[in-house]
Amino acid sequence: MAEVINMPRLSDTMEEGTVATWLKKVGDKVEEGDILAEIETDKATMEFESFHEGTLLYIGVQEGETTKVDELLAIIGEEGEDVSDLVNGSPVETKKEASPETSEEKEEKAESNSKEETSNETAELPDGVTVVTMPRLSDTMEEGTVATWLKKVGDAVEEGDILAEIETDKATMEFESFQSGTLLFIGLEEGQSAKVDSLLAIIGPEGTDVSDVAKNFKVGGASQKVDEPKAEKAATPKAEAPKEAPKQEVAKPQVQETVATASSGERIFVSPLAKKMAEEKNINLSQVKGSGENGRIIRRDIENYTPAASAASVGKFVPAGQEDFDEVANSQMRKTIAKRLAESKFTAPHYYLNVEFDMDNAIAFREQYNSLPDIKISFNDIVVKACALALKQHPQVNSQWFADKMRMNNHVHVGVAVAVPDGLVVPVVKFANEMSLPQIGAAVKDFAVKARNKKLTPQEMEGSTFTVSNLGMFGIESFTSIINQPNSAILSVGAIVQKPVVKNGQVVPGNTMKLCLACDHRTVDGATGAQFLQTLKGYIENPVTMLV
Image (cartoon, rainbow, N blue to C red; front, side, top):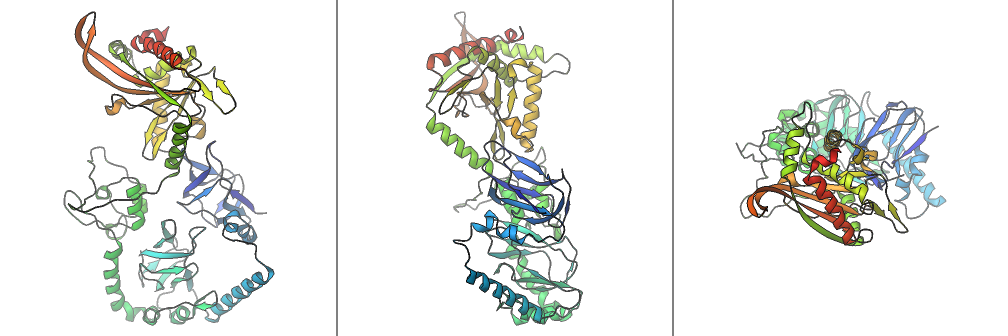
């Protein structure tokens, strides 16, 4: 019996998910524990495994598409099992219908489908010939546009080859062939659009006459308009070659993007999908080596691209005096950041306490500590440890606000803000007060690597009672942060700056660091926040006391 797989809730705040990658395709065997897909949540991209065995019969959300939690994602069942009722009854489909079909409407639809089947059967397909129709690449797609043909009439096609890039209502996606043979006919030129299930191409044995198939192909009982010259070309591939080649030569430059590089000004050929992905990831196309035809950059080149450590970032070339902008769709992470930070800023009454600590002893302490074999700690590790110890003494700052209660936490879980290309994530160092400095350092480094590779799990980003945000490594001296609700406070940490300071009545060289504590006035009064900073000052200015 078929099993319906819905979009899972992979984090406590997840409301919708985006399919980053399908690791199985329709028709594949699925074993319990197999990874079905990679799902992008509001916090990370996570592997989603199957809890069922069978054959993947249906995919309801294509790569790059987004749907809400508990909406239809896929269907697994026995090979050849009819799942049309499950698909038609899914939330994805019912949303499109304003009202249930009447019996008369159902009869009309059945009659229409019957006519379509009959009309297409009248043009018998020659042996080995397959008609390829415009695929439905998203649940809301009604028509598609051919952005680029990656094969031309007369080319050999293998199963799995990318035939074309199709622009849907949501994205430009690669469309692969499920048949092998020769591309005999193209029903839509680049830039042309057609409804789902319209004739897209015909594949079969080389030299097969498919002109009748193309001319008589009908969609929904109505004939699809097919230009006569194209049918003739498909019918006689050898005669068409001189005509087809010029068309392809003219069409290709129109759809392949050309970018001027800073060094040589050479032209770069790139598929629209790869170009869009590069823009979203801020990848300079001049640094990407294309693996497609004639060095063309395609999707897998962007997915596999690793920037060279010494490569200088080259901005997009824009002629002087010309307005220019790029639009990038908001990722799930970016939308969630916007929503949660706006809620925090406009519901929690923030106030800010600013201090400046003497860092001379901390610098000397870190230098001595790192002289030990196989040990290396950062100033951020010292700050996290100091905060954890201070929070144990000031539980009010370690509290959380809820609509009907205030939670006074007796444990200390410190969230550490980590910047990633899509925004910001906050992995949590749990029981930080019980950890040594090297343990904290190892945990934070591990989280940073996972965050940048999108491998953090929801469990690693949940449960913080306090947050530390450090921009000191970027040379920022001071800044304010927005509280990570339901926490009551967040500490902003600036850079260590060398400057003249007054010690024992004399001006001497010194090192200082500015910090800003943002507090929620509903849970933390000003005096309470100030007392916490006094305790924190003692630990940071004299780190040896943290070892007692």
